[in-house]
Image 1 (cartoon, one colour):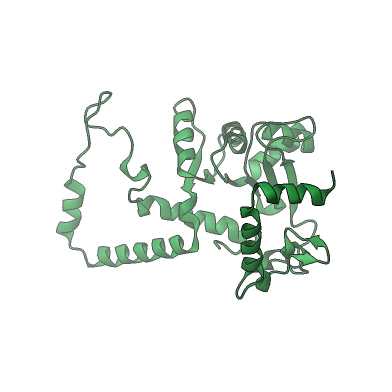
Image 2 (cartoon, helix red, strand yellow; image 1 turned 90 degrees about the vertical axis):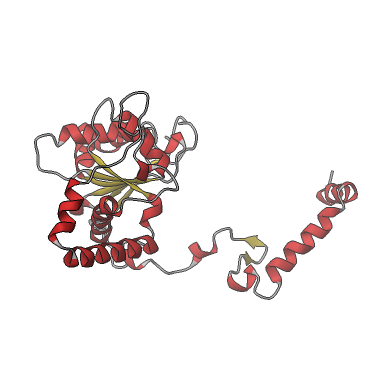
Length: 278
C-alpha cells in the first residue's frame, strides 16, 4: 500500500487529523510562532536540535584544552543495562580541579574500572567533588551509595570535605535510610535550591540575619540559648520527630544549613569553569 493511500484512509477514518495538522502549521508559521525563532527545516530535512548546528560555544568551553576537561560517557542506556551500554552516568574529569559525576546508575563504579583500571577508578572516585542526580528513577541513582562508600573508605584518615550530592528531595530520604547502615560522608542539596533566584534569596536572608544579630542585645542571645524546641512524640522515641520538619516537601528550608552547602557548590562550579548557577 502506498503512503498516500495510508494517509487517505486515516483521513477518512479520523477527519479531525486535518484540523489538528492545520493548527500545528499555524502554530509554527504564524506571528510569534516557533518557526520565527528557530528554523527547523533545511530543505526537506527536519533538524530536531537546530541549536547544535550553530557554531557557538558556551563561555565556559571557550579556549578549552584537552588537559583541562575530559567527558567520559560511562553509560547512555536507559532502564536496564545492555551488552554494550550501561545505564546513565557521565564522568566529567577536570584533572587538577577534581571531577564531577552526572547521574550514577547501577554499575557506574564498574564502568570507571573498565575505563581507568582498578587504581585509576580509585583515583577518579577520590577526586569527586560533586555528584548531580537528574531525577529519582533507579537507573540514575542506584550506583550512588557504592561510589560514596568507596570514597569514604579511600579518604579515611585524611583531611577532607564531604562530597556534595545534588538531586531531588526524594533522593535524600533514600540516602538517609541507607546511612542507618553506614555513613556516606556527603552533604545533600535539594536541586530546587540551586537556581540563581534561590541563591539570591539565600544571600539576602543571610545578610538580614547578620544585620539582626549585630543589633541584638545580650538578653536576646541568652533567651535563644535557654529556649527549648517543642517536638512531637511518636511511637519510637518520646519527644523526637519522625522526620525533621525542614526536610519535608513544601515546608520552609533551614537557610542556615543550606547556605554553606550552596556556597561550596558555587565554588566547585566556578573552579570547574561554569561560572556558578544559571
